[in-house]
Length: 380
Image (cartoon, rainbow, N blue to C red; front, side, top):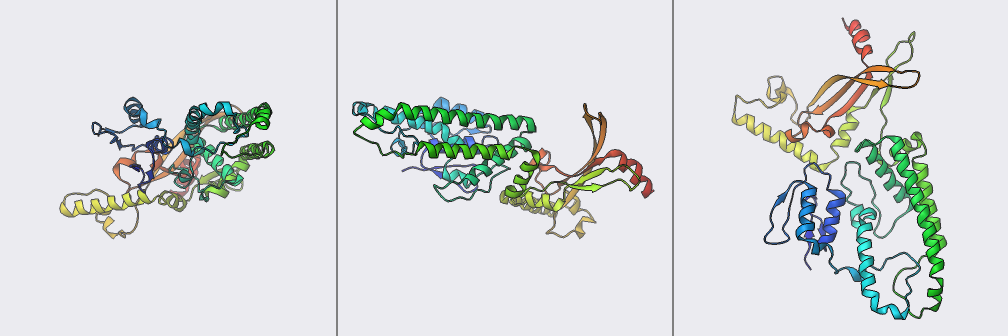
């Protein structure tokens, strides 16, 4: 049996069908900034695609038959419902019914994800979900949902009220699904009693299914009930650390705080990516070789006179400070506030990443007036 290998994964993951590979690329790689894939399904292909949309259009235009392969239809028997008993006079339609069920399963599987996908979640806010095959607990569902909300807020910049609306709709959808399943169970009760043949599908009691859905709904509601609970869950499951508040006012002044994010924690999170760490090391080595071959070339501070004193095993950090304006249109503090932002970049980061937002890391934030008026005067 031919295998399909994902060229975007560093582990060269293999898939038994192109449908599974395409679904994997859609779920885990379509938003990657460095998306590059070459289509080799036919000898007439071989074109390199740098965006997911172009690759998707090509697949649907020239290789749609690979997405509708019936190779795995026989294995699709894990339908959780109690109407898996059919009348004898419907035997002739079993093949068409199985095909429809497979198509539905292929669509929903991109949301549920296969067991093999759960251990290779490759987005920036990946869930540490190392569960065993074919096992799933309520805690896994909760962690997966928290990761989803965290990604919406941190990667797609959706505000809290928007994520709350999404949570409410998901709970409502589960409630509607519960009612539909209950009605369907009663409608098919007569068919179950009168049938003389049963399929090999799995059967789940309606009450157990309703209880599971209710537990999932409760976990979703508790996750986004308030900001404090959400932050606690992020700290518990994803090693999240809130910015540290530092008093920046004296005892005789109104209390004001600045906020600091420890650099070592940021670096620990950034360098936990093995691929990114390797690229940084390779970039340092390439710059060193280029400078050794050209005495007049200086690519970074470590190539200068003072830079030669830096340990070769250290990383170089550049600190920046900019002022930004924040407007509070309502409330008691309705005004325009100027804030000083201190951030840093890794000077050893490859050039293609330096201007990207996810390679610029925040260090501190405080009112601009405190830095420019108070502390600069004390220094002088």
